[in-house]
Length: 283
Image (tube, rainbow, N blue to C red; front, side, top):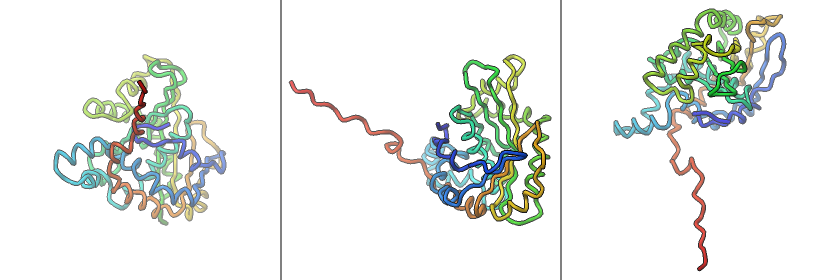
């Protein structure tokens, strides 16, 4: 199943094996999978920031190379790029975990006012609507707070993600939904539509829905054992702690973003199957 990233999330499911489930989820990404991401995620990551249609239209409008349009949206190397990568990785993880049900995700990275800074409000938000367009009590709102640690330092991503997840549960998620709706009134949000947002903004007008919160730390594999010393020893009923260990995280995300910056839209003919051959009917 794919969304407007044109990415098949079933491909991502094997990337995130759960090494344990309690009192926190531990995911250990393999070297093989991490090394494949620059190739397999280049287009999807670029589409998180700017769609194919916008790249093509703006490059034509301004008579510039498509890579220049892409560069105007994507972050420079540094803390923002690292944080964005952690969020995008969790977007993929969260989408893959819901399969075979589709999770509609807001591409907040497209809505930045400043490409050099993180996107505002809640980090990763998905809508799971199994009977849409009919709201039901099976609908789920997913929200993840994400902290990324790719190099050694004083940051404590697990504890920071837990602390900031509390903000989502109290008020930030509600503000995020309203902000997304305001943006959606003026520009497309991809798969997420105003009706999806209103289903949760105007919650009392619909059947009760479930909210599931995650506090996620994306950590370099070489640092994860030390970071796990501060992981919770008991599970919470309000949120799930997830720790995703990625081999050589800094070089991995740097390679992905370098490839994404060169990921111009593929030619139209490569996106569709060739037309069937004409049959010659004998007279």
